[in-house]
Image 1 (cartoon, rainbow over the protein chains, first blue to last red):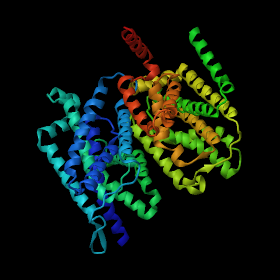
Image 2 (image 1 turned 90 degrees about the vertical axis):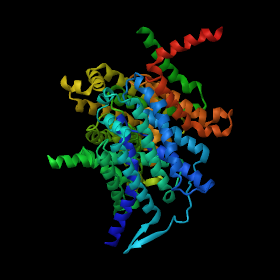
Image 3 (image 1 turned 90 degrees about the horizontal axis):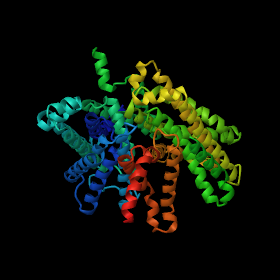
Length: 294
Length: 322
């Protein structure tokens, strides 16, 4: 029972960070209808920002959020404005041009990181890195808990932004129906730029929050891109509440897979879930909810 | 038409006599590797360029083909060359499963489903140690010491792959494929069984990729999961070969394969030893930049946009002469 609870807690905590990654992906997917295959690589950039700030300037990883999030927001905006939006006008056979472009961007970002920092594994050392506290017999890793709280905070802030502000409403309108939104006077070009920036900033937060508990190398992004996609499929494509559910589910499922099946298969759990969802419940968790209702 | 046929015959003859003229094992090896990529790229192009189903998981079929050959040799003790036959067939069987699952999705979602599929296979090959030897990989003994037999087998493989795709695209199937790419719903309403034809396209594609994998096993004599199921060095490379050469053209992937392997080798050898050493680490970066460049400016690849390139080059030339 103890092991069970411990596994559940660990899964839930990492699930919080997965939520941030998934929401970022989901936002981009919802508004632009494309999958950002550079998502994990953007996170990798944020992780390096945190790494540099903490090991050269001795800034606490959690404070580095103040730098990494705006920096990635800017990077996301630039990528969307100068690399992805121009492709809308390019005539080509394959409609997946933008997706392929994100692959290219991902490769370049990874290689730039390898150029600057080499392929070595890096990590951030903090005084609280290994500390934990106990409730009953279950240990709570302190950095994971802080990360979880941050993740909740950022998610709530995002929800307020999307529901209360003009810009947030425009983003949601564009996601629902781009043409109608354009007719209502929303500059959808600008919205896509800001959305990509937001998505990048969210995944940057996830990256910075992961830094105290994770290690870092240039190829760290790839698996997270895949995870982000699995989360979105799990929660229903382009659905933000779904992404939260999906993130938590994935975290818990991975954690259980690691404990009860074997560490080697931990990464496979995500993909098995992914295939099962595709075959059994194509709409993801939100689709399931709708299915039960009707 | 006559001119085109003549060019093809001249090209084929050039390829046939190439290893007789060039004795350097290094250049023969490069061309063999390129020919493998011609096969993978052309197969990918059949599915993605002609049928419109962009696959990010061709490593599945490549790896399955390679592992079929390897496992035949290590577990059953028969020649890995049997893999050239069974590798393609196993890849087709796997292709059926992949198609059954992934064709529920469209567009980018299909792409990512196949991408996840590739990762699943890599993890299976890593963890199922009793069958695949896991991370240790499979090592066999090469049949021939000379590169010559390998060269001609690879050439035969590439020519038959391109030829098959050419004839498929001339047939009724080809028109079905393109109609699915252009508008799946319209194709469906015209009475085309889109799922069936997407699967046919996938199976042909998987078959040739599987054969290429089996040949790779025989030629390199060593595989491990991170090489043959690699996302970057197989699945994405297949896409790059396709888009750089030109999607939806017969010769595009072949041209793309030569460009990509050329660039890879130029960078890996630091411009043949002329540039400083660190350049050799930049080949992945060169790939990334090339993708960005090609997508932005040559969306239909070198072959697809050949007219555009020609026009551009000829317009530039007189100016620079002045």
